[in-house]
Image (cartoon, rainbow, N blue to C red; front, side):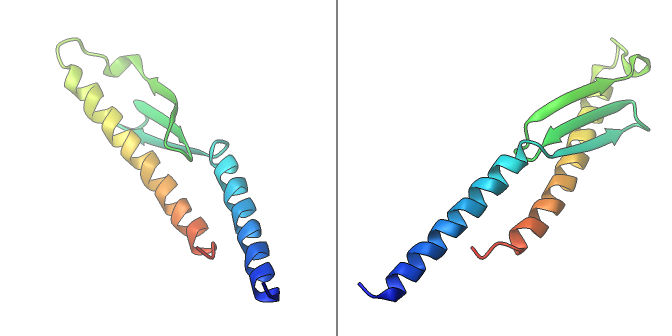
Length: 96
């Protein structure tokens, strides 16, 4: 096999290393979303795992639990959109 094969193999190894580094950094990244003027806050990492949830007691009404549910969904969506935006920039710089 010629030097073309060796070059491709080396490039593949470099790409694999870049991918592994990017994947490891995703767990360290944090993205926050808020809803209801900060009544609910959700923080996720770059793998979309929920890291923390904060709920202000003033929005906890046992008569209307759907209010907190809606705020949570909105806060999570905002955090995920922030993550997706950064991920698209990161992917644009990758050769694959």
